[in-house]
Amino acid sequence: MEYVIELLEENRKYLERHIRDNNLMQKDMKKATEELSQVSQLKRAIKILKLKSRKQ
Image 1 (spheres, rainbow, N blue to C red):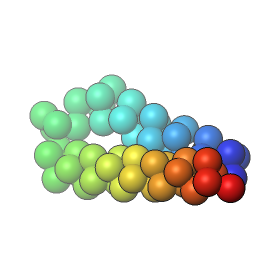
Image 2 (cartoon, rainbow, N blue to C red):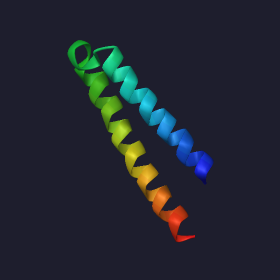
Image 3 (cartoon, rainbow, N blue to C red):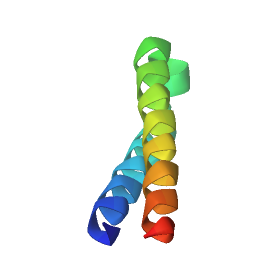
């Protein structure tokens, strides 16, 4: 379970870095919003998995 959480967190950090480093908000707003929605989905998934792992 911890391995999956770590992978999701790495993916989230990569997407955030990609948006910031490439100035996507200024260059391509559509792609930036798509990636930001993926980031929010990853955050939600991480939160759910952490809650489940604590309950076990």
